[in-house]
Length: 535
Image (tube, helix red, strand yellow):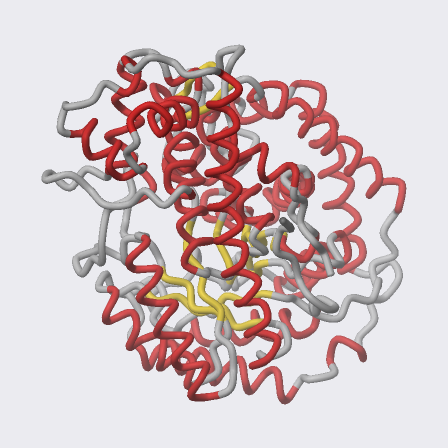
């Protein structure tokens, strides 16, 4: 069995070094990021979470909910966790029950939910037999998902898609069926990636709702059924129009790895996948979400999904120029952590945003410097570049003008993933015609400045080069300090986004579990034995 990787050369925006960066500074940043990542692994190894355990059940095909709407995956894991026995791994208890009862997985979950079966009270079969059964079930399930992903890669290559930068457009109606209408309209006008924003605060739910939903607030719930509805609609559009359109969602929050698994099963192409966002802005326990992040990224890496990291969020709460080094530092750390989860560089879309206040003298040049710095530091990564939002004041004309400058920086620095800003950003959830205006602006800039990236150079000693060099130098200093103290201490000190969090606090901390010596983890074993095939 092989993981799913890009077939053929991966295409990102054109990257030609123009900043004359100090290679010693760059290598020092990478070295410090390696030390930081090793510290994160040391702090999280030996731990599992309720969401990690539910993820195995999801991969094995367990869906559905009880009469109260509680997912069966939650019921099964919670029953074991309540008995203090989750440290063996849900895979052990399920495989043992498969051997002892003759029931299938859904039958086991339903019977346990009805109180007719005590999963942990069954006699334990031979340990090697349990391990073998768990491995067989997991390998078969992963192979089935991988086969679907491979077929999707082949279809995408056959149908074809636009070259980068891929136009990443948000929908946020709350009703999945309305999202389909928006997605089709966006595709009709040139959108390349449809990102369905999650309903407000879904990241704080410690379960994934079951079935299609029509009542989200500020977005649509990320559920397996909603993923399937959107995927089928976009596949139908692609067959009719001869162009593949990618689908994206969010696997952050308390169900991070579980949503990654559901996205892989239903054929998503991109996932916003970052632990620090949940730690800083949703107050999710840092240990919980770092453990969850590791598995979610291994799943995304194995099944060929492109992840988007969340550095752009720091600029929502901190000054863009002051926070620039922390953005760069976080990019190095995220890139290293993702690589350790078998994500290839072309699957790691590190985050950045166009957020310097629009009345800043030479703000355009400063933004261009930061964008070019990111592209040169991560030349094989697409980079998820975000439009201005923080300083928009409700004037749609000013917003549209700022978005146009953002579009020019995107073209001028060869970005790979470009999230579109809408004129009514910050006023209300943009309508379809607002998205169309955004797409028209992008098309205009991409056409009229097509070869801008090849024509421009930056003056030695000029503002752009100076700003990039200063940012890189400050990022190195920050990374080396974090490497010495550890990422967890750095988060506690508010180094990212000026938001401090404590490692023993936060939502979901009760879902962190220490693994026992006999812990059984067939999913990680399966993913480890079958690294991503890079093509």
